[in-house]
Length: 171
Image (cartoon, rainbow, N blue to C red; front, side, top):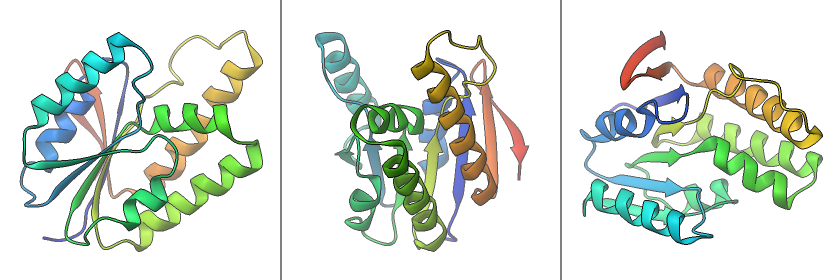
């Protein structure tokens, strides 16, 4: 199967993850990279529910910080679904300096371009809401917006989830 990179963006609970799973269904080797961390009971339950929904034909890798390293460990004929980029960015902001974050994002985007694997990337469209009052909130919005723009540039297909429907932005 020909290499694909699909970026799926949208608001919270817009259907992004379900659309991503549907797009990955035709691949024989499916890998799910989860960037969420189970830091409370509610998140633990949510993560377990999502694992059960995916079923046994998915390999799940939980990696909140080091996407490049995780991807390098995956066989080359896989589709890699990363859910979600904005959570990954949040994790990076909590653990690294601005310069380190930019290097990690650039390395990830370079890997997307060079890897023979197909990718389905889930991200949140955060630029359509209220401007945060905190410095960290504004930095997050800016980082997310810049990263989403970079990802859209290297993704031949960009979809936006609205009310569970995939709207084609770029194909």
